[in-house]
Image 1 (cartoon, rainbow, N blue to C red):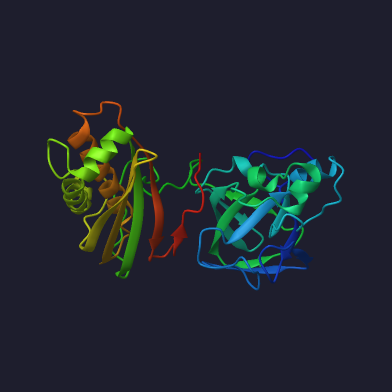
Image 2: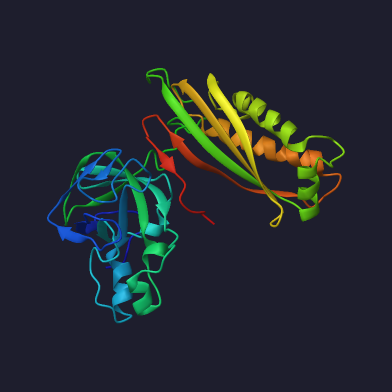
Length: 317
């Protein structure tokens, strides 16, 4: 069967698998219950993170069989084995119905920190490249043979800052109950080792680089809705900016933590805070080092809200 780029009637579930402990192969079972915000009921990898359910295509397992391995569904620790759909081509954020449940793709592939037994046998493993991870949006039962159907809105991905006509809108959060929100974001400033040394020694002509960058980052968090057009004004309860200086690598890692008790999250506030603090470091040091660059601006974690918790586990690039 040729895999589909979307998920027509040919896309289906081949097997569903669980394990009681992490680090072991999963065993096929007749059916599983997917629980919204949690994952596969009774599975060791379930939880409130963003990798609640793992999926791998039977076509990918077939590649390993052609390398001479005797492998089957669950041997790569995937919860759901699929057929007829190109999983790695599903964009992060896309949703699909699988059996009675609805999943949202949160991660494509993963970083293997330790080589598994399959890698040592074949010199390769498909899960890091072709496996995907998802969170459960709607609870439901999933069994082998169930259809997999992509969920789209008007032919477009369901980005929530557009209405049905494709016009930009500010999302209505009026019906949400306020709750505690936390977000942590990071940005890394790359520079000469001599520049880092001058910063830590207080030798920059413009003064206390990190002290001013900290104030700039905190101020930026409070001004996020003025900078990001569709972001909501949020009543922040706290904002902090910390720095990790590495003289040997020539880097300053900026970490911004923002909290609020509100109807919407503070991910953008944390990202803007880290970015502006990093830009302030550039501005303070550009006279001494024109080659400074800023990178790895990313959300590290978030807590609260309907979507639950998120933890960044590995770089996307």
